[in-house]
Picture (cartoon, helix red, strand yellow):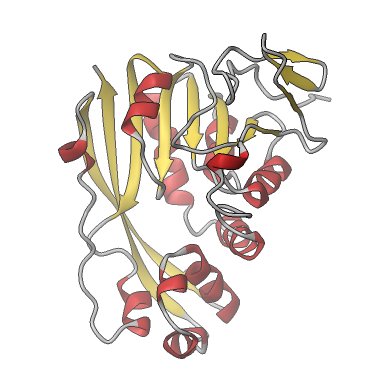
Length: 274
């Protein structure tokens, strides 16, 4: 029987930025700052001043909705595309920055890539630990990555904040950033049920803001989405920012639907360091 084990990762101390070394169930630096590995398998490297709120990131309800929705396979085409990109670029050591409950990281790890997953949400990382024991899960901020310089050959960001300085720092020379965001026609029917006027998304063009990353490729991934229960529709809504930007009265018509046929439209951009 194969025992899943998380890979060894070059963590750095969030307090003094020195290397962290693992001693049994604890990570410790030369300054004797120590961080215990939780029983579920993750390490919490998020300091109090980095949190921003008492419970930063997605809450338990949002994580549960995301886990149920993604586990049903509705976004499997995106997971397959990310695995394809890893194979095309021969990626070996990837950081999923903003990994949530670990769906995409787990798909990529199952394809043979060494993966670390990071999220600021404790609920997200705890759920991610239930997906896979072969990934190094960590609670931390994307804006202050707890890894030594040059630890990864790739960083993945799926519908999450992108920090060029930190991503570049933890990348090896020539390393890649894979950024996924909404395309212009992402979930138009869901949005039509919420808003009186639906405008196209402004496609993310991150290269306009980068100084150290150059665009390698840009493509659109589009596919049909068929949801056949109010529960699936509610789970999708809770995954989107529209859940927080609309009132219960605006959400009521959508949540009363028994079916939703929609279009998923995603922009996938690959950037190279240097």
